Length: 361
Image (cartoon, rainbow, N blue to C red; front, side, top):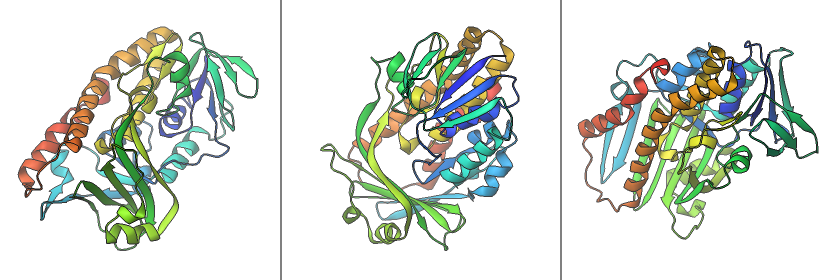
């Protein structure tokens, strides 16, 4: 039996904990917050993310907690087009679903910590430092040693900073505003609008709520304020539920996976542009693949080599797609009418590699 420390109780960390629940490992999850409080409002899970959750028996549960998204409506240049997401993800076994992060994290935590003595969640525990051999020091002075340490602590990962100080996250000149608003009149359509260098949109979450997002280029770092919003978004902002999250986007320009008996997953390893809408799904995939590699290889070093080799090509591709989208944001595009057929084909080609099953990734 190995001792595993997962640093971070976000989506990736909780998915890994759920995947390791019956593995025979003793698993500690260290979360610096004193409660599992989701950052952000809603999250989009494309079919690849739900396929990974299905390996844990959670896909149908998550679908039931959220809203299946049938159509993507894009407005630009005086025209609006509608794209069926079933056409973007042909032959996918699952839909695209939008769900509140709070609901997703509660479902993952319930699966991971169901009374098993081998699974322990430590809230309010912050990591101070970690060594490649698995020795850790917590901020309260406690020391411990693990056979495996997993950094699932986000784009500003402490584990990454200690192991790879030369590879920090990169702040982009793109700012985002995200919040959840009460809304009882939405259908199954994800709407996005681009106008005068500002993009915004609404994604239904079910349960009478909608995820609202705004993005704009901000070379001077000026924050997005409600005064920047169009009337519909401003009205939604007045009905917001919980905290609105505003700030710059961050990416990880260099993928780093492992050092000794320590490994990274999710945004700690490969943070992408939020416009790609795959951050949550790819973190879930990471966790499921890592759990499978640990099941197949009893030697930790071999399991981590397996994990890195299986994830690197898929995430290198995702990084290229994310960079391409960021380049498109920076270019001053003429607001010409959109073509629904071309847009659907572009999205289909962009996401096609994610239709490949995880055991072939």
